[in-house]
Length: 327
Image 1 (cartoon, rainbow, N blue to C red):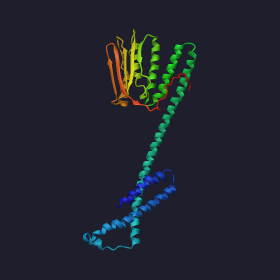
Image 2 (cartoon, rainbow, N blue to C red):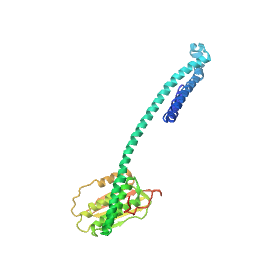
Image 3 (cartoon, helix red, strand yellow):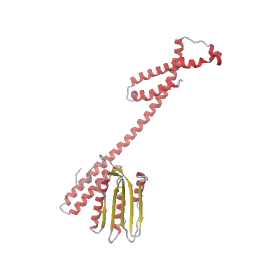
Image 4 (cartoon, rainbow, N blue to C red):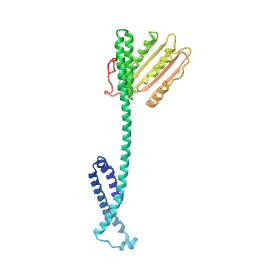
């Protein structure tokens, strides 16, 4: 029975007085409230002692203990004063323990928040340097080179434009957990344009990409396979290098089929690119992807299927086309 006023005091201090008055710095009002609550708890405890507890104690006392039944009742004010003193002792003890526990918890949470804030501050500073200093220098340098090459070589200026778009996507959009599928496919188109320019029409390439979509995908999920097609396929073949890329989206499923020629003599050291993509697929699309890589006699075949999620209309933004825009 005495737990009722104790619980009232403990929870009132922990969830009302300390959060609303002590932590905001209202110490005078907090002290007054704590004193009032302690006396109120003691009064409740005394009331319980003089009513319910006393009734239970004397209800069958004549049958159980003649000594209890024969004891005399002191005056009301004496009985109430003794009960109040006992209640004050108990309420001060319970209130002190409850307040100490709550204050320790608040202090720990404040320390954790301060450490987290400091960590986020450091990360924000690093991201600011990464997002402002280096891209600022990089893109303005590319802009200058682009302006000089426009009158000298149209092919070179086109490559610089494509490189600028590719770097802009990697630096800015790839920091997000998900990007618009249209942006990912646009980046792949820019990458293919840069790579095929190196071969000067010596590469046979067939590319089929879907039109506008409203789906999201993890960034740089498809690019490592296409990079491998050039690195371990087209660039290693001395005659007739070829690549076939077909990406389709039906309902919410993306399917990519990538086939590339293979040199007759291969001496390929396994890299970490595909292994990393496999891990990312397992983490980001568990039970929502299928990946098979076949190493045939004359070609490599990659089949990838990913279940995508639809994008909210506010998430989708126009694909960037101005590669020479200055920062």
